[in-house]
Length: 147
Image (spheres, rainbow, N blue to C red):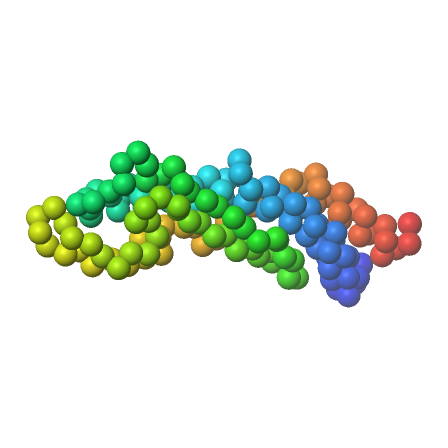
């Protein structure tokens, strides 16, 4: 088998595998998926860290800081051998997200900022099952050789 044939078969196999990978990635980003769980855990940790550091003087009673976490993601897009999507994590509880600052219990003013900016995963790895990869490679070889 020459190098051109090998490369053509590899390209066809990639084209067949990527939709399966996109489905797996979509599941990872959805509720119950690993990426979703990581983002949710990070948001909760951010909320806990914020409350521990800032201890605001005024807080709306009856609300919990971690009860209003929202996680949404865009559709998965395929670009060659890469997948991409964006995830938006927010919190509808008071004071969460970006804050300009507020007075502390000790009378000092605490400056604010974006408490989420460093808390979320930037990359997620997924593995396509070997059986799917083998099926796609076999299908690509059959297509290339006209079998």
